[in-house]
Image 1: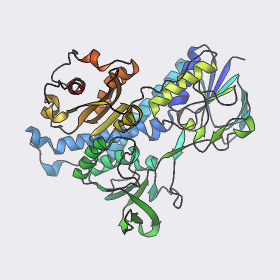
Image 2 (image 1 turned 180 degrees about the vertical axis):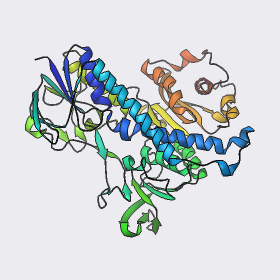
Image 3 (image 1 turned 30 degrees about the vertical axis):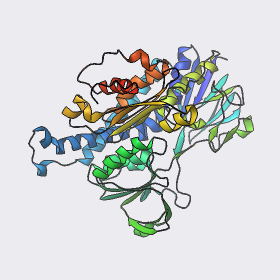
Image 4 (image 1 turned 90 degrees about the horizontal axis):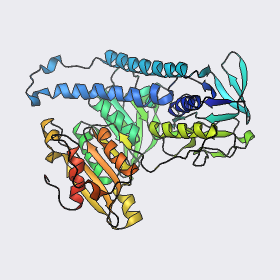
Length: 460
């Protein structure tokens, strides 16, 4: 049998399907929902569509600073059009994936799949049961939002990110529990559209995985946008009937807050239940399915990739893992490479990083070199009226090895591509000292930060 069956049509699943088809395998893709999964339909892409609308509204409101006179009373957000545009983006991208399925002769079956044996799937589409056989199976069922233990999502007041991007109107107030990536992105969307946003974070700072000096810049800008941030604060209870949230701060002080919606963004959990994993000797936990660096599970006929294995829950990581899983399922040899994984946060300003944070680098290497360059000294940032932010590069002084990049500021998620290539190719900082960067560009800041490592930055 020359057939590969894949469960889940998100970033990991559809990339695995295309990769397997390119190896001349018969491929069946089982999807329980629309193609593209959470990322395309309820996550990455629609969120960025809303962010672009917020960016545009913010740009127009502040056009006077650029010498463009507009009547403030004529500027407003047409939420219905914002939502329509978001839906158009999703439709175009889903159709694009459908085209790729057809182009690669991949059979797509709608339904919920579970494992019967190592080579047989049971598919339930709600009307009938179908069974299919395959030589290898790839699980890529993704993840789902984690609710508060005492307050499940109701889709009315207690909402998750999927609900938050399709609200019937721009709310007057929004309380966000969780100051991670999702929480900060929605704070950045709605605060700039006029919503009174409050963020509750249990940790000492927003975005706990990034360096303090990077997140503090975002924290300040969110507050400038009208966001109220409570760190070291936990939700003790809620009262849905009155839309009240009861908070406790680290000093024991209690507070009550009211909001039109309560957005819970405390993380996502892998979808591993009711799939027949135990019955087929597949090791897993609440953190996800266990795999090796070839994406193979404890059952040699079954592979897993994407959010369902836990780890780094990013779409571009899922793309990579899906390709690796498919190549190995098709009899080739491939290993995952997590050395240079960019982390992108689409707030205003954006944050992007790759490699070690400064805290992590110092813990592992001890003494390191740090080079920084502020956007306030970059001509392009100044002329575009976006001078907030900086580039930070970390270098191992022994070998001039670049250990990590962190960027906060406009277009950080695009600029991080340069740092990602440097880390992936293991380029040393001294190789780039005579690099010629185009002027005026934001990317000059990366070169200046590298020069700053050896105290030779020109414009700082």
